[in-house]
Length: 277
Image 1 (cartoon, rainbow, N blue to C red):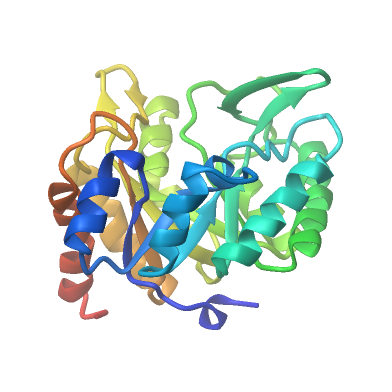
Image 2 (image 1 turned 45 degrees about the vertical axis):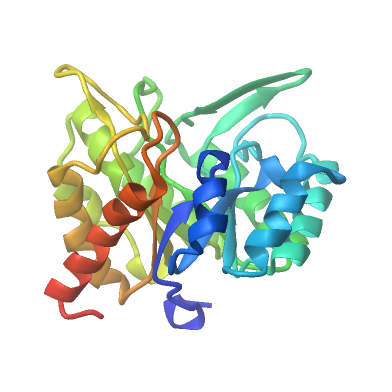
């Protein structure tokens, strides 16, 4: 499976309760919504009621935060069964989560913690990623993190680690261009080096988002407009993918839905300039 196997859904926004009222009243002509899978992996109630209404009007893609694929504890098949059941409801064309760890035996840190970039960790994650994709029976993608710490034991740069995992596991990239920028600032690498060394035929979807710049470090806060530096990376990356679905993440300090949609639609402007729409 490669990029030509997947639909380009267009421009989407993360579905958040803060925008439900406007969405249902205005019925905006947005292309699609991305949901946080775990918010809807429940037996019933208001979340599923809202999701059913959205599914009547829009395509939905699932994105997770709790898989923690690099954690040392065994894969949680109860979790994966619930994830697969939700995928059957949403008919999501793919499922993504993060290339991270966040669990230990008896503990869940509810955070996206970076992994050591070593061959041993690659072997470990590759096997688990294969199992996840086979179990879900739909394409599975891992997202690059925004990173704030590194390990003394690192044996390679992030892009080599990321690329090796997706290629050996035969899975896909959910490429967050804001995270590339945030990590480049925090770790002092060139975004060009990252872009030049990843397999764009593995990119299934792109995330864009706003961040907070504190000078000496940058935080991936998802609570602001996309910075010019990130749009520049998007403009360079998007044509290399051949055209894939683009998603604006805005997860805090919410602004009205229409303003959020206007921000997402800036991606369409870049695509037109690149003559890709």
